[in-house]
Image 1 (cartoon, one colour):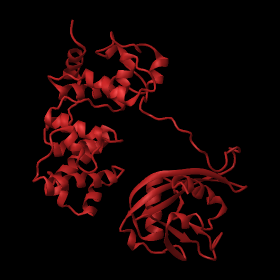
Image 2: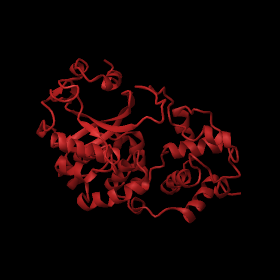
Image 3: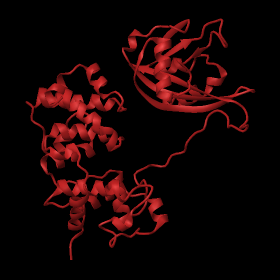
Image 4: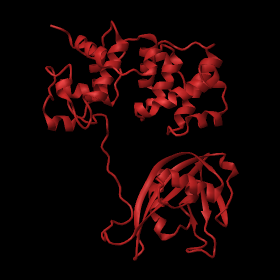
Length: 366
C-alpha cells in the first residue's frame, strides 16, 4: 500500500502548475515569489514577478535600488511595505553577509522582515530543508483529512505538519500540499473525487465539515458598523471615496473653502466616484486633482452610509500612502495640515464624516 506522501507526490507530478519560481533554487528569487504571494493570488503575482526580476535580477540590484524605484516596480500589487521588507533583507545579505544567504529557517529569520513562514519557505525551496510550511491551504487540507480540532492550536498544527513532510523530497511535498489546497481542496468547494487522499479524508462528502474548515487560520472578530443603515431603497445613493493619507506618523487634512458647503470644516481629500470608475481609480483621480499627489498604496479603512434626507451618501475611506507626500499642495482647499493622531481627533469634521474619527480612535487606541 502506498504512503500518503507517495499518493500526493504522484498526483502532483501529473497536475502541478508550471510556475516560474518552481524552476529555481536561487534564494533571492524564491524570496521574491514568497513575499509577493503573501495575501495575493498566484495569477495576479505572475506578471509582477517577471517584471520585478527584469529590473532587479539579484539581491544586489534590489539592495542598491532607490526606494521610489522599488515602489514603482511594486505598484499595483498592493501592501508596498512588503517591497520595503524585501529590500531590507537583500541589503543585509549584500552588505553584512557578503552576498551569502543563510541556508536554515532559523538563520533566515535573522534577516530583517522575514517571519517564520517565509523563512521556512526559502529554506525548503532553496536549500531543500525538510521543514513544514503551514499556510491557509495547508491548514485546510490537514484539518479536513485528519479531522483536526477547530480552530486548530497553532503549535499543534505546525507539529502535525512537521510529522507529515517527506524528508526525501520536501520541495515537491510542500509544493504539492499547497497545490492540493489551491486546486482541489478549496475554501468554497472541494473536488473530493479528484483528491489523491479521498480514501483517507475524514471530511470527504461532509459539507458541514468542509464549511467549518474553509479558513482554519482566520481569527473571528466582531465587525463594527458605522453610520446608518439604508432603509429606503428608492432614495438616490451616491458613492464617495476619501483618502486618509499618512506619512511619518502624521495624517493629512484639508480645510474646506469658506464659501463651500460646510466651509471652514476639516475633511479628508476625496470626492464622488464617477461613472466607469472603481474606488481606486476614483481615489487616484481625486488625489491628483485636489493635492497634485500620486497614490503609492491604498487599503480599506472604514465605510459607512449617511442619510441627507433626500439622498444617501456611501462613504468609502482608504488609508493611503503617497509618492512624494511632502510635495502636496492645497489645490481645492483653503489649507492643508499634517497632524498627529491626537490632534486629528480634535479637529472639527462635517457631521457626515464623524465615523472617520470613530474608526480612527479605535485604530490608534486613543
